[in-house]
View (cartoon, chains in turn brown, purple):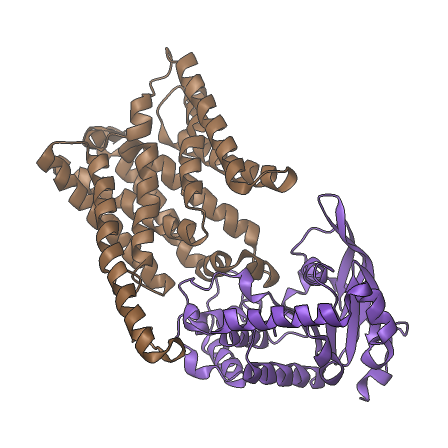
Length: 307
Length: 272
């Protein structure tokens, strides 16, 4: 039997890995807060799925959330394209409105809806070991672990299959379009995986803290490398270390696990922000001195080989 | 110059021309920035698009590439819609339009030129890499393959963009200010490469802001200011009269000096 501690850790690691992978592209695309927007705006999708199926079955919820995630992205872009409104303002309008509709739906149908607003916002990873999937009378283990594994599998497949497309698109959507790459597929594929990742991570870490896991590990890794594949691996590494570190920190100070994970993320980022050899505060100071000595054009930073 | 004598704006070359644009109108917020543009360009030509700031030069090639929604009009590449012919058209955006801090190497950027030749999901092959290296060698950038792109000077970044376009092995090259803010050595490399492409039968179109270098480096020119003022061989259309029409009263000595000093400052800022 796997202990409940192990299940919680497995869940946290799955969430952190999935988030770091898709989060890397959000950060590079300068769309970090789209993760925030999506994580809130999917709420009506979840409630509708719940009302239609009258169960907390995760698959209808995944689909409902996925649809509302894509709706958020689409509405945001249409508003800013068609109207006299900036992209970020448009996003603010769309996601707060959708989220508020979700909140109202919960309070209206509160009698029939077993969705806890607290849980949606903050998650409760500590309950994961008891949220079991019973299939034909067999105990298959915690349901969230299955769902998160599926989402991680989707994310990894999407990124490995579409690697060159995603790389080009995040570098320059215009360039991707002129090269004849399927920018619509790439964009909505990425937004779709962000939506799935967000909803699947909901129950464990909640809508707010999922944003930390989407953005902070990639942003930390970005300070340490100049190559996309290393950025992805480092982001996953930082996600996992903060998940595990956060769990034990929560045990130690007896606090919320999700909160501790997010704090760990912040601490890692702060450390790297100061200490990173090239792009950290210290590194930049040293490089500044070197430039003064050698002249900017002649500077070559030592670069490990690509492979 | 002998090349330009064979064609001019009104003559229709046999077969479909490499690029033809019809009735192209583009408006931002109901304000037209391009009005009813028609042109076609022959094979083996090197064309400069010139015009004052805000004349719609960049907009013209972006709209022709389908990057901007046009109010009307269409582009044909060898007689067929652009979407089916993407791999035959290489577009070089303005240098400022991409994120140079993006975590990729020079080689990665040049390899992107091979993507139109690859299927969805397909990875670049050894041959694609050889083509990319050849393109880098041709632009004098082969020593920088593994550099992260932010560690390049403005001129070097422009050469990397050119190498990416070369690696695409297209028939038509549309370039947005490839000579903006580059050093003299890079300017030579780029001009030589553009002429070589033309001599190999390619159709090369360049948004250009330095009027003085037009006659000696280009064989055709497009004078643009919201409308198409003239389009044809340099010897026929690059006239004082047409320049006056394009730049209006602004092409006097004072504004030339302002323009010049502005460009020089630009060079210093971006190329240091």
